Length: 483
Image (cartoon, rainbow, N blue to C red):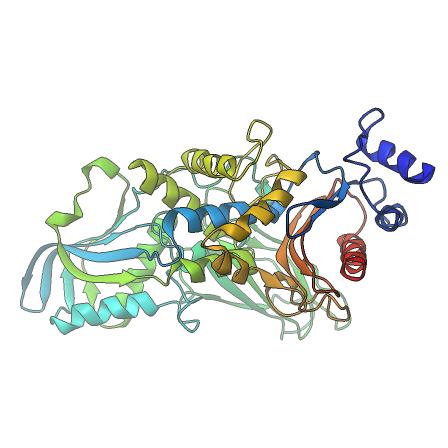
């Protein structure tokens, strides 16, 4: 190892911390990092061959923030526990009697933690489940509900977010509330059309049905053509008032999905509006019921039961598109199913930690706050995660897991990376990003046909993320040609 490499290793690990394992890194990788715009950041690189032998290692024993690379762990834990064929069931129930075309009593929806009630798996038809339920009611002649719509969301606790999520993320689609009864991933989908005169407010539309469940305060301004788009959306926390203060050049079209609060109420409010649009009137009120221990759906009349897509498809969405909502919903479902109590983030993470222990993580050194990796306080050792990628190959669910990963230059969060690189189609993995953190882990098939498990973590950088991406790509390309 050159003197330059030794000094570099000491610089980024702390004097006296370098050891023979940390120094097992090619000079080419060191040079790429040294010459990058983020040379002062914490870089952790570990690469193993198919037999699990470490062939490249820089700061592998460091605790790092994995960002969404943590989904590599949580998603496999869900496959391990539920199996790839597991499906959610959400039931439409009745409490009362039918008299002619009237239902005298309440309609109840039993939330079972399904994150997919929406359009993602149903040809973008977010009302797919509601259509089924309306048809079930119409088939038995019901056109009037003389009672309330009740949403049961007691399967999960009432804590909407994991600890440590940053407040300024909470308005956006990637940080919605979790709830056992969720619709459209607990967001409204906003369209902004800047086709008016300069200085005026743009037109806005939103799904579902321009619902009055949210209140948009449209303080946006159309600016002259050629000016830049400056985005500013913020939901007033604890409310469904959403402030819109963007500036948009004339002719600009913008879409954004923004979170709502009290998702169970959002679900049943939208369902009621949908019923009425389809000719079924509702005379009562909207209520949510979170009393887990008093809920006995077996005493109710079953109108219809919706079964979700299989867990394998859910995990593909979770990993390939890095869906935080799915990760956190499945965490609470895991806790509820495992312990027979209201699902919570803490209980779910306890089970994730047990899974990590079986996969040779040093769980005395990890810090877990969420299942998606968005919490900055979530920490793992880079070496543990890289070793884990090797161990996964022996699991019966590995094929499903591998197929859930994004393919470089082809799909998911890697669709627009590696397009002009030999890495296109050769790297399957998971990206990760939170402020100051960029991560990339997965499986690389090299020029010589060797299969490597690769983990790249860049923590505490202040340069542009695109420059970190460039350096990580160059490291992967070196590995591709070297091995």
